[in-house]
Image 1 (tube, rainbow, N blue to C red):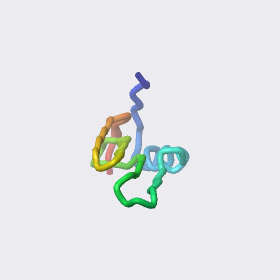
Image 2: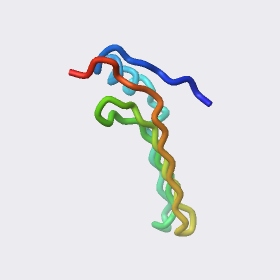
Image 3: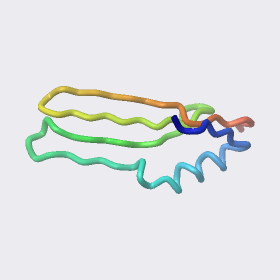
Image 4: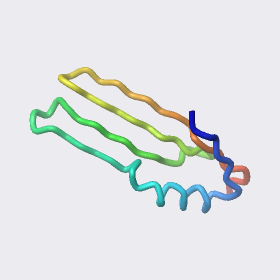
Length: 73
């Protein structure tokens, strides 16, 4: 399990997301039914990491809150 991160400001959270380039991943097979997508985004005062995978039409998804902003403005 990863450590939970507390950000002091929204700017710190956005900078963290910008620096984590590996979480911005999108790959699509030529068949149209298979893909992988990873991303990190800000949802209100939470930083969320999400993963969506589809293989032969079977879709799985996961979202994890990895941080929180203490003072949202």
